Length: 206
Ligand SMILES: C[S@@+](CC[C@H](N)C(=O)[O-])C[C@H]1O[C@@H](n2cnc3c(N)ncnc32)[C@H](O)[C@@H]1O
Image 1 (cartoon, rainbow, N blue to C red):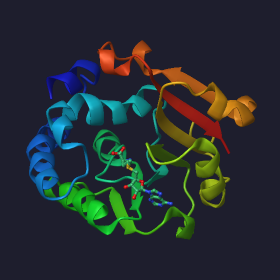
Image 2: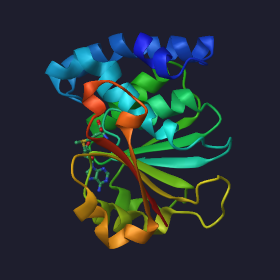
Image 3: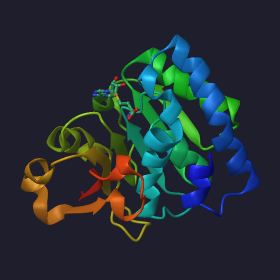
Image 4: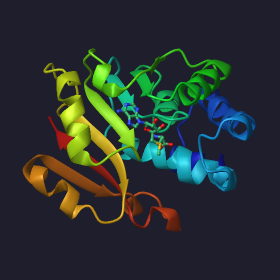
């Protein structure tokens, strides 16, 4: 939890309480339904919560922004982002019902009011959003194909509407076809922990 305050020192008491509650909630739920690797639960704040918040280091979403988290699993990156941006609306989707249930239970336990959940494949979602966020779900090209229908043409942020992904490792190849619409940031420029050395935030404009 100190790690979150190290990089996001301006949290309200409510946000601090919500982030702090995540450890016990994920430990408990993860022992019943696997949403993150069991041996990684001790690294919850670094590998999952702070990693998700990497998106907030590159874009500051305006109040009223609508965001879909495609393949959220147990709520990453959607839940940490929803805590950080209480005035932004998040729609968390996953095709596996028991995972989205964990995300919904955790959001309910910490009193998150700006999140909706849907158990379905993203291909079936018809609503539109300013951004789609995603971590560890599928290659960029496949994501872009699915979400083309979900990106609203009305702009309300400094960054034009599009896809924002958390990715690791070599990406030049994957992003090549969309090179002129892509911006990449290295998370090591924001977070000093070793885990972030190779991690990136990738944005593709719609
Ligand atoms: C490796 S997990 C990552 C979960 C989470 N984003 C995280 O980083 O912890 C990938 C998730 O994507 C979901 N998924 C894959 N294809 C999907 C689709 N077409 N629509 C919705 N969810 C999908 C899977 O059910 C799975 O929960």
